[in-house]
Image (tube, rainbow, N blue to C red; front, side):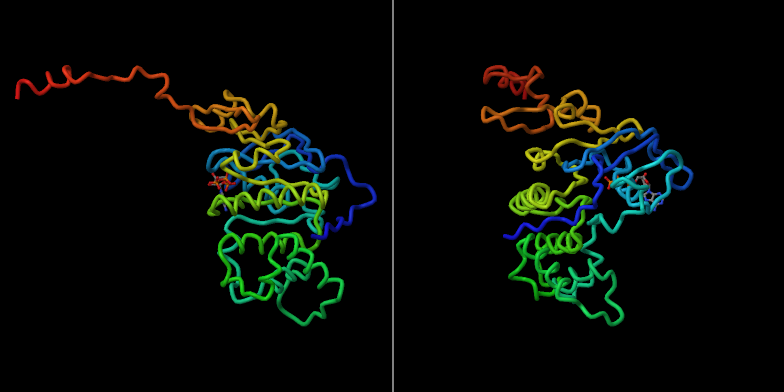
Amino acid sequence: MSTPQPEQSAQTPTASVQFSNAAISRDGRTIWFNGNFTIPTGTITAIVGTNGTGKTTLLNAELGLLALSQGSITVLGAPAGTQNHRIGYVPQNYISGLDSTITVRQSVLLGLTGTRFGWHRTTEHQWQQVHEAIEVVHLQDYANARLGELSGGQRQRAAIAQALASKPELLLLDEPLANLDIASQQSLVDLLATLNTAWHMSVQVVSHDLNMLLPILTGAIYLLDGHPHYAPMSEVLDAKLLTHLYGTEVEVITTPQGDMFVTPHSSAHHQTIDTHNVLEAAQFHAHC
Ligand SMILES: Nc1ncnc2c1ncn2[C@@H]1O[C@H](COP(=O)(O)OP(=O)(O)OP(=O)(O)O)[C@@H](O)[C@H]1O
């Protein structure tokens, strides 16, 4: 597999994203506020929070697609929305909106040309970029397949290839693991790790399930009590914090091999279970 380098700007900032007193409202309702954190470049960040806390809203704010009601967000060293050509975005439910009759190659090319209308002569360099993006997501055998002919996992990869075509420095993915089987989730996680290490890409990924991502995560943005917070994983993997975040009792378990995972607390271990031996049970029926 080739490992092309992204075209880094001469002054690559040390922060990929910086929130300063950032707040956002939708339809006059505050979604989150008082966002103050910096995410270093070259990191893989999960975005976590319960339904409706504003994870997708946060990605849209980073892309400058939604205006802040207060404060500022700096992305790749400049105001949000001004560097989108250096960002790859894979929206939630993107697949369902795709024109399924176009081929993988055509859809990835759209990531460079931005439109399928009009006559554009595709340069050799552009086809090379398309080829590299398809190769890195391991879809080379399906390059000429129509999107509608792919499985859900393959289509997810095609969507990521489109986002990668322009070799972004920051990749934003909204719930990419949803609806994938475990093997497809694992290969997507491996892909994100490759993009981070070989393509030197910063990654932010919205996910409800942290476990699959844990081995590759550097930190997490967590939406809690109406605020977006950022912390390295060593601080996020705290049972009290996760219990508060998910609104249900959560444990952080480390296996003897050192693998960590997050799991709902099994309250059964701590309950006095009401059991009866055979004779006691028989007494319930004796009066019948
Ligand atoms: N187009 C919209 N107009 C107005 N309010 C919206 C719009 N889209 C979302 N919202 C509101 O913004 C809040 C945050 O929504 P958002 O989709 O960002 O949450 P989320 O954390 O990504 O949720 P989920 O986990 O369910 O995908 C929700 O309360 C939602 O009702």
